Length: 196
Image (tube, rainbow, N blue to C red; front, side):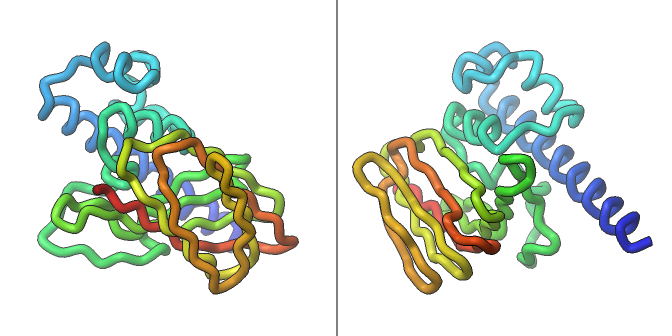
């Protein structure tokens, strides 16, 4: 019975994330007076896939959402957030998440980007052996990784740093980078993307 309930909760969260992504992508595209062709050229994501995303008929990968964010020069989290309210309560239980590496890498958008703040905040969970590769962000983006549980290797350019629980690493995100769980258990870290 509890598996059925958990599966239903997951389906509801995925449907909400798809609705949020559809709403935000279409809103931003229309605000900028862009066609789907324009967005496809800017992001490298096909027009057909973008149309499916805007209709809420697709579940894109983390990499696809990053391509859209980078091509549109917007934050990743802004694509996953519901329409803006006067206040927001943030909890990793309630926020949308996306995953890759067959569900072994999960990203929770805890505090979405706001231009007045200039940053966004994520919780990331990685199962043992999970790997996530990220495209380069725009110039001036700084990443701060705070390891909460487990162990991870963060690589970017010539940097290859092993982080243990309690370690924090700050690096430039304008180059391709990789996160890898090298522990035998679940790794959890907080990630701040600062836009300068």
